[in-house]
Image (cartoon, rainbow, N blue to C red; front, side):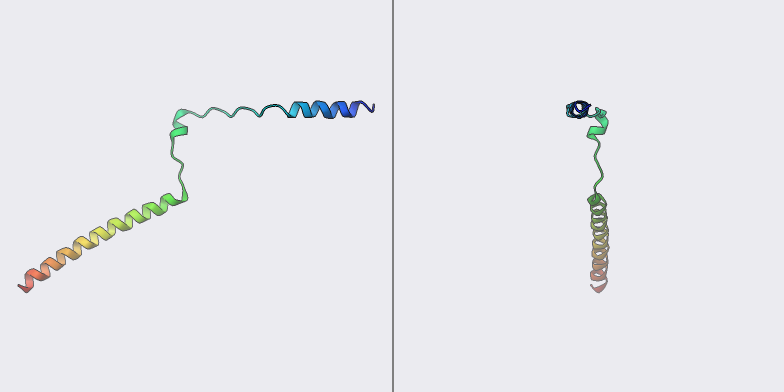
Length: 72
């Protein structure tokens, strides 16, 4: 009976100490897919702000031109 416990522990350790299982192969489309990050939304907001600023600058330039034309 004394030899049963060490034998059981040794066999359990031998069974658990093997190589880790190989990971499942991901499809090619999943490996090339881009993962969203928290910064993506910030970059979208930044680009939207740049676009709005361009429109505001264009409108200000038009108003400036109209004011100069009216003053002459």
